[in-house]
Length: 219
Image 1: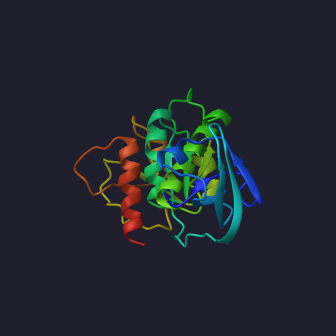
Image 2 (image 1 turned 60 degrees about the horizontal axis):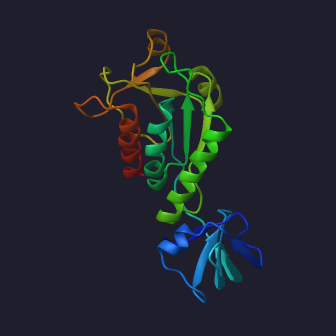
Image 3 (image 1 turned 90 degrees about the vertical axis):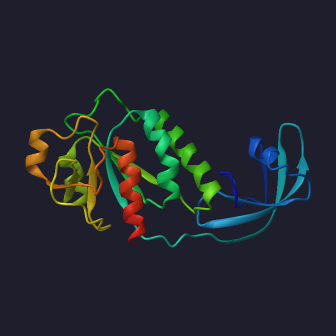
């Protein structure tokens, strides 16, 4: 773990009450630790007081903290939130810049990604960045349908397992992984289709990991 996250990082002195990570790593008074709020800087602090319910840290220095990763993005039809939370750390650690969640015709419209769910996703992504030393977190946007996604992001390529033309993993294109029930006939008729180079039919969450890994490997 390169750093701990705290929204008050940068202040001369900070108090942290969430101690689980510090206790797990057996941090103690006079230890030097890195703290970040993912603002482009890494702050070095000294632990000056370690109490039962909080620790107090004193700022020592700061330095630039930026990852020079190429921009990559991917669209995924809205899936069960438990499945989404499961793959977020992996997508984040693999360097995906943006994930667009989109409601397709066969998506479960009752699944909502509101403020409560967004905050949970953010906590998962922050913990992931702490573990993999990423200087930011994967950004998530939600779109009501494929048309609104296309209007905002440009040409789409739908990933369909029945398509004949293989996906060439161009990170400049926006690939869309459909829901478990596939794309509707209307959607299939309106957008280009690509297939993954696999004989297996993957779950949507696994297809997202597979596609992102292949895009990253070709950067």
